Length: 177
Image (cartoon, rainbow, N blue to C red; front, side, top):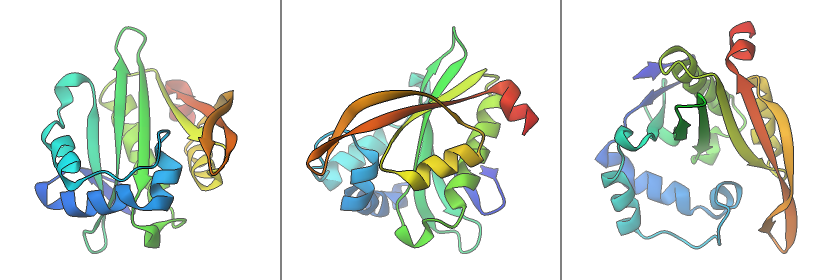
């Protein structure tokens, strides 16, 4: 378990599955998170995902839990580790919309960065974010991420094409912050 000022990152529990399933199927969450067709997942698919969580395939998934009240509100993780080049790709979501815009995602990302740079000894963290998600972009910039590139018209959502930003932070930038 890793703790920040507002949240802690912990292992997923079987009891998180119903809320995780509800969060991931929320149309607004899905719109901001998934590049594919926003089709709902079944409870069985969510349970299968839970059963396959493992650090042995270079993915590390954490549940995000509030410090006040101990509520599971979302997740974050390292989706891919390139050990040769010392780069990790990350993702995060806050599924409980009552906690949006209150700094909990920023706190969770700061904890995740600390884990990556101070425990995994990696040199760079990168992520992808949709141009129509300004709240996430602001969060990442607060955490020290910089825009490294634009994938033009990469995502089709709500009847039109949108850009996707590539953002990254280097170990030396993290250490300066």
